[in-house]
Image 1 (cartoon, rainbow, N blue to C red):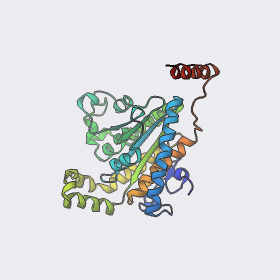
Image 2 (cartoon, rainbow, N blue to C red):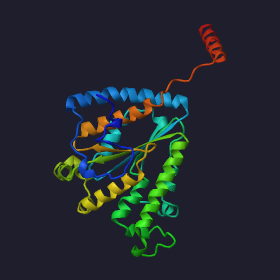
Image 3 (spheres, rainbow, N blue to C red):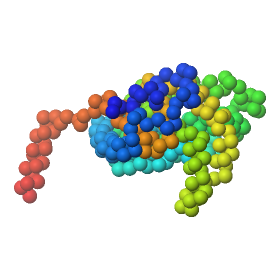
Image 4 (cartoon, rainbow, N blue to C red):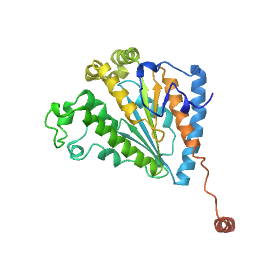
Length: 294
């Protein structure tokens, strides 16, 4: 199977006119479950190898952004795909409701503190995109950010959101120009599958802790969220910062697709381990001789 990084059902490099209704939530690119799981197991080994080479090269960094509706599978995908990664060079950051200290800064500040350094991977479980998604559905949250000139809901116009999209585009363009590979994943779960997963959280005792009644209040705003996602993806998809609309009804495919896409992006870098100079090779031989004569 060819890499999914260019699959038109999934990849969005130019977001003009994105319609989530045209993207199947149960799409599997012709894979069956057994093949998909086998592929993921094999691909994880390749991903770990590429990560080690990137760390040794120390020239690029990787920013992976995961956004989704509740119960789409962000946590399980991150856990499944990245288990076994070199921990010193791979960190996961979750962004919940901003603290008072974070609200005293602009909305990009807190995520900027944990951007990946060269050679490293940062995984954002939610991100600064919450500021054009959740706040788009709940604009009253904006009032708590004490932004000059925004004194009431009537001040939050379409130009306000367009300015935020521009800030995000500029931010990501700056990161890309400085060597950060940006891949953004929207885990596209259907409303029916979300219902089934919520019900399993309610009926299966070991999953009870995952359920929050507030999730149903957000579910009631499903259409508003889909509109917000479409707008955000359309406004911020670019060659240097693509979005991938990952079908999320089948977790095995979602996880395999995410891993496949990351591999495809890293392989474009043509990574190799750094070459050892003649002087370093001489030192290797010297070190070997010294150790063998102890």
